[in-house]
Length: 342
Figure (cartoon, rainbow, N blue to C red):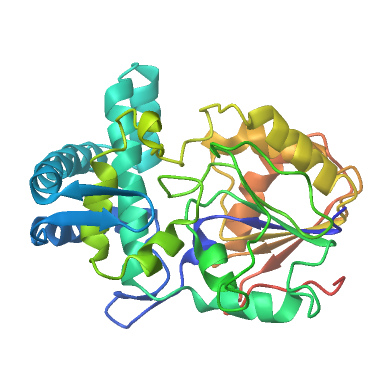
């Protein structure tokens, strides 16, 4: 199906920083998250809850008192997650520890808070401009979709791809296959496909950016508190269902088998992979190996990263047993790399 696969990690949404290291565009990477969490907490803490009824566009209505109580619960959860993050080297390490010791309640809190944090970041900062350039280069003019010879496999929770695509077509949706979708998977389209193998930072299947843009009567902090107040409640009888749509590599979902089947169909004749901002961490290695073993025609892997040599060394563990693949390092990260084969 797709001759070229873009394989994305957190560095693909890094964007730009100013001379003092503050974010100009994009979202925080792992090393920036602890400090940014404090700013996120302060933003929620200082948010004023509107008086009277509060409506989430097209979804549900609640009241000032309920949202105020939810704010206090959210702040308490953020505090506990900040303490956990500080005590561990990365969020993934903290999450895996909670999983191993079966502290599932705290693990769910971690995912709920992380989901809220990433939505807040994307509302606060401009998009990583490289996604815009990527779409300008590769979208097919007549249908405004990825050509069928280019697909994307993303380990990222963010919605930078979906946000950026809105500038090209506000009425169309990219064919995104989300590990944690509530509605299952659509049929495979005859165009490029996007797979989010860890899910998305959203609380429902509809892209979160639409709710943010459509609910401009409230700040993003108010919207997040409203969503957070229901994320662990059974609300299906009321006509809506909220849950955190991100997860970690070792967590399974009802879509796992179908997603891997669809990925296999998409990458079976892949000849080149462009790895952008992804370090092939050990936590993800089992799935990375499975995906790369589907690529029986793979010839070249381009690694675009500020430290591509280090990435190529960890990639060796993923490619163990696979031979004859050419590794090309690309240290220039100003734009997403467009291989000569395109």
